Image (cartoon, rainbow, N blue to C red):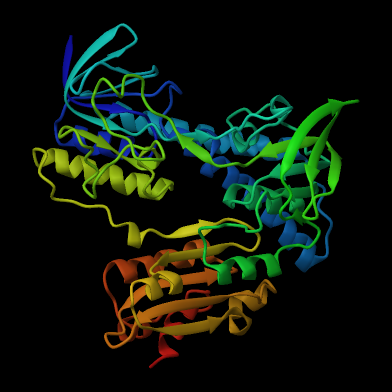
Length: 453
């Protein structure tokens, strides 16, 4: 029996920041992940590889549109580059582990036996505290022909077997993964069809943002709403997708690839019931703002708790758990879900944070909008990407920034600056008085604030 201070189950952003923080403070740590690498789903088949491919697509799109120069894509080269980026970060994390002799990493699954004991392969562990950060996986629904379909994990995983660009593809789903993949592969050269069961895209996003995105997306992408999938068959080397259109007519599409983007579900460690850990109605681990589960010494961080399914949220939650463990289990740090920036990495991207109009109205909060249109922005003019805006929501009276959204150029980076302002309760005058560097799209943030003063 190996006795440790903390057992950490998982190796992604929900886990390794806590492991490094605790190890640096002298705690004895065992961390385990069957992938055998740090970085979790984000690095192995999620945000890092998908955004690497997206950046390559953006280079192609801007070169062709602005310089009028046709770019022939060698998709295998893009995948090679993606793999190289992943390998660079695998090595980076490996070097992090070497810095701490009191941090042991095992590339195996963990089986919980109770709230303090677990087995990892042949190793028996007794831990004072446990952090569960096992993430999520694609919710691959079963239907006739589902075995002929893939998920985004198959495309973006390290050393993916998919090394050539599909001439066409059908994507099932209307969430962020469906739309991100659709816009990326449309630019790379695939003909993309998107079948959405319902009549709504991005159902948790403000309707104004969704309509702005749809209006700005390439109309070459074939999006069919109210078109439920019925079955897929394989015939003569092609996938035949059978579905019903919005009028109830039976239709089919012959395609090279079918991608299921039908949501994700939590990955729970074996033996979670033996540890007494409670789940919510969706199957995620229930936690409070200190990341503590119903079991006093067990914390759950990242996607597995269902609070905020983003890598940067997982990192923050991981640190929250570590800080509270270092306070002998006393809650001294808390996760603020209102201060998490969110981006849909489509073309164009949309980003948002905090309390936006629908939530403000539901809470009875009166607000004022500060607006800056990218058509007036110098950098947006350089790239001829004039659609979109920065919109900041200020509480009426105090003029404290409570939320924001950004549509268009540089939104994934710009939303971070606004996140700092919102998290720290800055008001319109404080934001307006900051001199963002010229010529950058950041200038629009202070300009949006000045628009209400």
